[in-house]
Image (cartoon, rainbow, N blue to C red; front, side, top):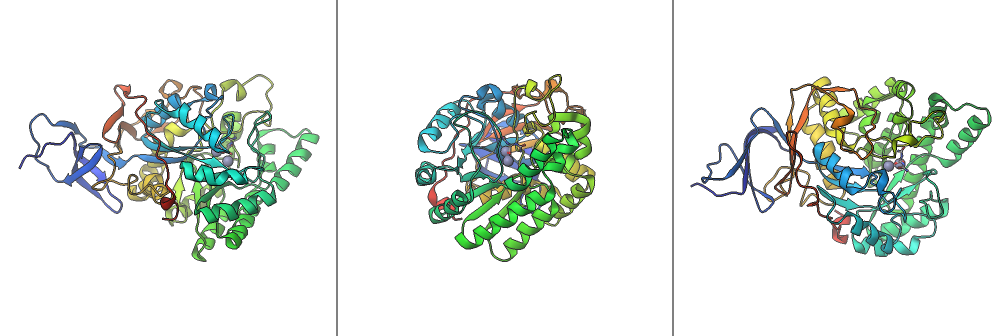
Length: 464
Ligand SMILES: NC(=O)NC(NC(N)=O)C(=O)[O-]
Ligand SMILES: [Zn+2]
Ligand SMILES: [Zn+2]
């Protein structure tokens, strides 16, 4: 029988959770409704030929800073989500800081929701924040549908009265108690404020302000101390934790051990810790500045080993953009430059290039780190994160064997700097489909700019 579908993606190498099969994918009303070999099609069915391409579930990037409201001129939903669409991402999670007001109460969440509405090319979830003074706002944020809460253990930087602040010990502990009782999850930027502040003050006092001095002020121990302390609190409070942008093998190991002991905790790392090193930070300057800092090549190899062993839960970009003059300006010291890497558009290509094409890791592993695992961890796997019947047709077509060198013109960010400019990649996103809509093709660019939807996270999904 010839079925009528809205869209069929034919002949692709379809990346399923555990295997890759040459299949057709049929889509109707935004959902995957059939998967099979050579589906027979009614006349006039819209067909995309994916012969020679991988078809992967769209990336779910749990960590971006688009900085609205007020700091939309640093990025904003429109250009940020367009860049993600071009990079094969179909759902992202916007962080509660760098915009003003930060997303730490319901009124601020409403402002963010308004800023995003009609401006996102792909779907999204929103993080709330845990900061000193907002314990009584957590419940309303959870009820309004935030994906979880984010807190900083070290100073997040930024300026101005209303800026996002790191938690004190009391706020952290009490916040974890509250979030546990809500069935929520706390995402942590885990660097010790005590260690980093002492080392930074000493470095500045002594005029040591180069890239390597910056890295020395944020050593591996600062990450390990913060992770260890938070794990203890998790044990005491029962609060689920997600550690963002983990940069060292020791911290990954610690989190993994805690998981084996039964704690409900997870670890994220970022492409920049897997493809850039401290040498790049010195060579490229502030464009490669982030916190925790880039590490040694030895550390990086250990991270790859842990990734291959399944000890890392997910990969996210931590796209933290800014106007280029905050990165590049005559006489700008490395310490004064904005900390944060612009990279969201390149995550999937970097991971496929380095992970699959260079290192020979299974494409299913890389795909699960980019899509399947984030969906499961954050309670959206009934909608997203895999190619399976009934799920949203969030798909990315990837040419796995082409070569191109990334240029500034390729980037859709508002400010076109990135440490990946000039890199040669051995794969390229060909098309991105969000709920059955083609939102990007490499030939036409971003086609549909404002169709992305906010996925409110309901309470039942928290404790999946
Ligand atoms: N204020 C920021 O955007 N900070 C971010 N900056 C980085 N990672 O350098 C982060 O996630 O910590
Ligand atoms: Zn952070
Ligand atoms: Zn971040």
